[in-house]
Amino acid sequence: MLVFLLASVMLLVSLPVYADEIESLESKTSDLQNQLNDINQDLVRISDEIASTETAIEDANNEMFRIQDSLAISRENEIRQYEDMKTRIKYMYENGNNNLLELLFSAENMSDFLNRAEFIQNISSYDREKLENLQSIQKGIEQQEADLTAKQNSLADLQTQLKSQQDALNQKAAETSTDLAVFNQKLQMLRAERARAAEEAARRAAEAKKAAEAQKPVPVTPSENGTQTEDSTAPDADSSQNGEESDSDSFLQDSLDTAYTPSDSGGALTPSKGVVYFNGHRETYYSQKVLPGGGLNIPGRHVAPDGTIRDADGFICVASSDLPWGSIVETSLGTGKVYDCGCASGTIDVYTDW
Image 1 (cartoon, rainbow, N blue to C red):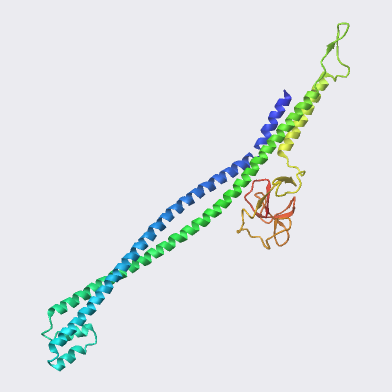
Image 2: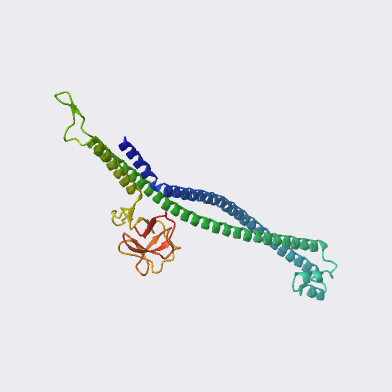
């Protein structure tokens, strides 16, 4: 009975070892996933706005082409009307007063020409009205052109702003995806480690049960004279029971110590051995290939031959949530210095290029 109780206790104490850290990582991954979903929604919205703006710009460009064509036609009509007026006036006065013709054709511009033409009573009022009407139409078209140009500039500025927001969101999405991948990787490692701990606890419980069964006392058998005798080789019942309880208690204590107390028997941290226990702490690693760490202030940062990230003094760059920045700590790979945080309490996270 004690053996089964022992096995149950071992399973219960081994499984929750990483529960807090796993729960923390699950919460972080959930938050990052929600952030990524929000960013993607913003990207969809901005993409729609960019598409709408591009359509408006295309419409404005087409309208500008139409207005420019209308303006060109209006200017051609004005020039033609002006030439027609000169032809008629010349015809009317080619044999008339030379001074009058000289006054008329010495005009420097259209306005001067019209002012001088007012003195000529035989000029048709139709020509004057026609020319003024053409000038009015031309001014209206020029105003439309100016307004449309301002609209085009405004749409172009809006398009630039939207694309800038889109680029910023794309960068943020990439960074969030990278962080999410890092936390998912750590979460998978912790879950695998917890599963291995559960298997180890179950194995030790099975061994304890087998050892306890081997220590059971030999049953009492009747002798030839009808009295019951005990096998002389069998241990005393009380002694056997006490021994079993003592062994079981000792094994229970060993199991609890194994579940909660790190040892230094795990060797050095390697790419294939993602978790070891060293110098009283749990040791893991995270890679700059997944988390570049551009914001870390590591003087003389470089990759050592063993694949660790080190500073100018040769210290291994590590992360710790328990030690202040700049603290020196011994790791399974050498002496490290704290440059980062964000890992679980009791853990030293070694920065590598693995």
